[in-house]
Length: 401
Image 1 (tube, rainbow, N blue to C red):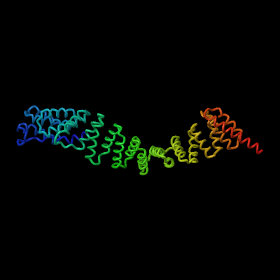
Image 2: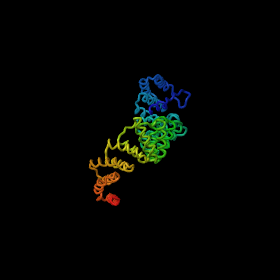
Image 3: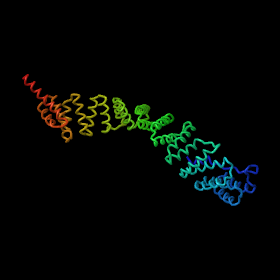
């Protein structure tokens, strides 16, 4: 981009005839005119030789300045940027060009320094040029300053220039907005970054990456409701349709207290084959159904999860819901299988197992299970209460005897 800007902005100075001020002598005009014609014809090597020859013959500062300037133009065309800078600085030092042209040297030097990644020199020259009276600063000039400041990591200085560049442009290229957003992010200005990203969405609404970045920035800014609204809208427009998009939408829905819809999103992802029925996704789905109080659906998902990725946590969660749903036999089986895997929470498992056995009227087995939990610091008191309940039941049965 920088090279094309310089090519457009870097103009040859027209050779001055006898009527112009400052003026060339007839001899100087003759020396330079041959080089100028070669340049017009694109004969850069020949022009360079002619200019170097003329450099030794011309006498006035103005003629010398034209020689140096045109040598810079030839060097630029040949992509010899360091040489172009040297010739332009020589032109500048002569101070012989008309004021407007002298000032414009600052702009061209700034551009060349940017191409050479000499960012401080780039900024210095462009600053001086922009501060000069009568100059016409374009959107691309402000963009170049912003790019230089980004390389120097001077984010606060970058913002006014990229903001002005975007304003001049109307609808700017995506990369311009991204540069401004990057500055806000570096400054941890999350709300401003999210606001600017919304502008990008207005102009580039078909780009899924822009939607994802907006959601990310809204989350970073603590704007959870806005993030959910953006993710949902992108999902409905069929822009955010990757596995991660489905997962994030479900997670945002869970955090926003709409677990039923979260579960439906995950199930839709399964049905379409977008999301794999992995342990991670099954855990997410089970959490959604549990929070939605859809216990039969939660049991179905947890049962599958317990088969493909068995763990103590999942087994306990499954057994608890089975007990809540009065699925006593299934709960006991879940707990018995868990005990075979040498779990850590034996007392809790034995307590739950005893409750399941009581409700199946298997009292002796229940007493054995509860006794195994009775000595536990956390679950011992509950186990003791259930044992007393068993004692009372047996007394009542004997009384009815």
